[in-house]
Length: 185
Image (cartoon, rainbow, N blue to C red; front, side, top):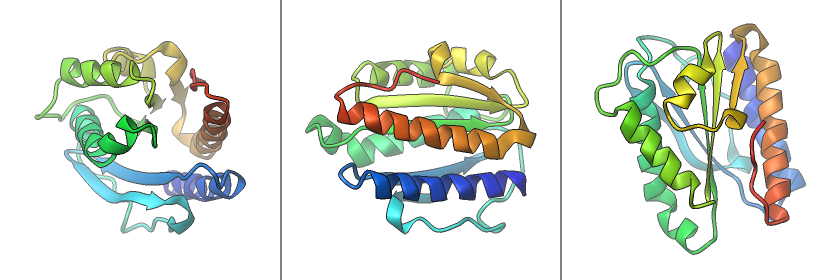
C-alpha cells in the first residue's frame, strides 16, 4: 500500500511539474517487474496520467532486474530514437527496486551496463537507480552507474523517496532549460 501510494504521489507530482513547465513536454512510461517485465503504460503525456490501482500494481515472483532494465531501454530507444537524434527529446530512466537481481534470463549485467554507459555518453539519456532496503550501490555499480546517480532508501520511506525524485526531476528540467545535464542526487 505504501509503495502504491508513493507511486501515485509521484504521478501527481509529475503532472504538477508539467503544469509548471509547459514548454518541456513530459511523457511517462511505467514498467513493473518481477520474474518478467510488465508494461503498465507507455509514453503517456503527463497531463493524462491516472492513479494506479491495486490491480495495476501486483507484487509477485522474483526480481528480474536486468531483463526489466534491458527491455525498457530497448523499448525507449525504439520510441525515441528519431526524436533524440533530431535533438527534440531526452530520456530519463529511473530504476526503483527492492530486490537484488535473481531471475533474469535475457540480459546480463555486462550487456545492460554497456548499454547504459553508451547511452549516457550521448548526453541525451539519464539513468538513476534507487534501491529500497538493499545495497543499491552493489547492483548499480555493476551496471556502470555513477555513484551520484544511485540512492539508497527504505521501503518505509517510499513516499519521501518519491517526493525526492520529483524534486530531482524538476531540477533536471531546470538544468535542461539552461542547457545543462543533471549530474545526480
